Amino acid sequence: MAKENSFDIVSKTNYPEVTNAVNQTTKEVSQRFDFKGSKATVELSDKDLILTAEDDTKLRNMNDILQSKLVKRGVSLKALDYQKVEPAAGGTVRQVVKIQQGIPTDKAKEIVKFIKDEKFKVQASIQGEIVRVTSKDRDTLQAVIASLKAKDFKIDMQFDNYR
Image (cartoon, rainbow, N blue to C red; front, side, top):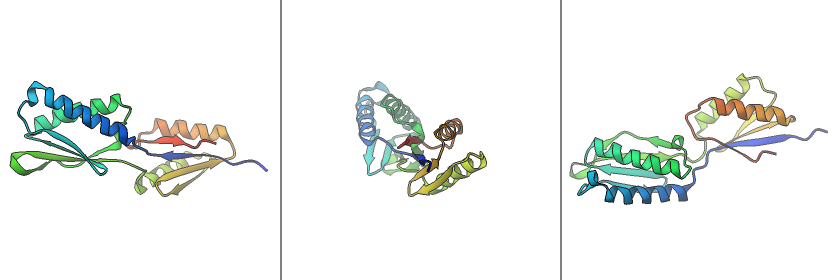
C-alpha cells in the first residue's frame, strides 16, 4: 500500500518580531527631526497595530518606517491588512492595521479551488485555519507548492509539515 504524503499551507506571523519592529519604529520616530514634537505613535494591541499621527503625511511616513523595520525582521507585508484612516481625538488621524494569523476561510476556498483547477492529482482540504494537501507522489506536491508560490493570493503563506 502506498504511503500518503502531505503538506500544510499556513499563515503564521512571528509576533515577537512584530513587537521588536514596533519598538524600533517608536524609537526612530522619537529621534527623527520631522517628527519632533508630534503625537505620532505606534501601538501593538492584541492582534492589531494602531498608528496615530497628526496628519496623513506623518501617518504615511511612520508607516514607511514600520514597513522597513518589519521587512528587515522577516515579517511579510502581506500579513498586514490596512483599515481605513479615521479621524481621532485631538485633531489626529488613526489607522488600524490587522495582523493576519491563519488563512481566512474565503482565501482557503480560493486556494483549494486553484489547486483543483490546475488538475493536480492531489486532495486539498480546509482544516480550520490551514489547508492540507495530500498525494501519493511527492513530486506532485512540490509542483503544487511551486504553482502556489507563482500565484499571488494577497496573503502571507508558508508551507509546513512536508512529509
